[in-house]
Amino acid sequence: MPTFRCTALFCLTFAGSLALLMQSAHAGGFLVRSHSAAGFGTSLAGVAAGDQLSYSYWNPAVLSHVQGFEIEADAALILPSIDIDPDTGSSVDIGEIALVPSTFVGVRLTEDIVMGLAISSPFGLSTEAPDDWAGQIYSRSSEMFSININPMLSYRFSDYFAVGAGIQAQYFSADLTSAYPLAPASDVELDASDVGFGFNLGFQLTPWQGTDIGVGFRSSIRHDVDGDFVVAGTAIPAGTTLDTPEVVSVGINQAVTDRFRALGTVEWSNWSRLGDLAVVDNSGSTLTTLYLRYNDGWLFSLGGEYDVSDRLTLRAGLGYEISPLDDDNRDTRFPETDQFMVSAGLSYKYSDYTTLSASYLYSMGLGDGDISIDASDPGYLGAPFSGTSDLGISIVSVGINMKLGGGPSK
Image 1 (cartoon, rainbow, N blue to C red):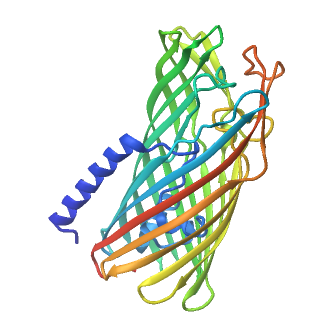
Image 2 (image 1 turned 45 degrees about the vertical axis):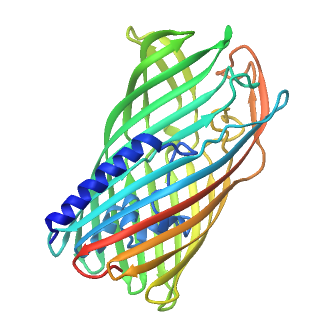
Image 3 (image 1 turned 90 degrees about the vertical axis):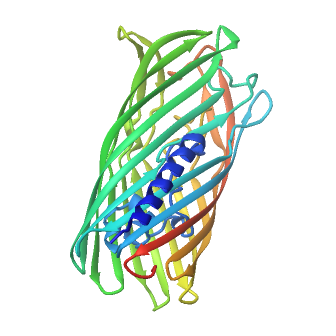
């Protein structure tokens, strides 16, 4: 059972993670996946079917593997290069370096029930362009930020089947600026925030020895974001409604030998929820509209884990992501393309109760991302823009898992 010392450590870690999130949880993309150093070592292959505490972000049934009291802290340093090359004008790199931490806790309550808590930043975006660049009337800076607090429970029915469920409380904010078309020296800015609620579910199945299958679901969360719409220094109370996408992760973990495991993941994100977002004032009049019109997103990844010894595990993975953006809806705020990922990582048992993990993942945009905004585009603001984008993101992740009761770490 957890002692007072364990509870105090949890409280300190919770407070520290929350403070760090408040300062720096800005990611290079709208959907943030950098919640596990071990998971990034395999390009997230098999996370819904795995046994690492941080994998409970994708599937709360993972908590059923906790033996006593476990706490894990992970941090990812995101180093993006997001270049936009206008047909007329100088090329700009709008990528911003970011640090994204996550914290996970698991406590076994009974032989079959485990309680857990995840603190993460599931959605984020941070880009910055020079004020006088060629596409300034369509974007200058973009910041989206979230904090998600997710208490969970898992229940193991048998050695072959476990389920999990949780509740999500999420703070979300957005701060988007662009040049005012009639006076480019001034900004148009939307600064708004909200707290919304959702849930997550999952199960893990072991149909036969050596094979684990997991499915996790994170619900959509509705955010009625309220704040100010600022035009040339004049603030108007305004807001809009944004529904985050549902995410379904399916994973498999297959033992090939006593030391080697093959892993796979298919993940679907319901980004097509994001259509046209009308920004309205207190009277209900539309001030502007954000024309997003995203498609659904997909991630496919394969990876492997090899136990070099009882203390050292090596990981590697490959992934392919189908972006929710294409030539029809790509914009200047985050001009994403489909991406290919390659990763490697390791875990080392520093002691019987402490495991350290580290990984490196590189995500490369595939092809030039065409951006075309003209009079036929619903977001056209009186001046056409065309160009291409090039994307490359390096992510370095580290994590520490401490098992403070109930036996040595796995």
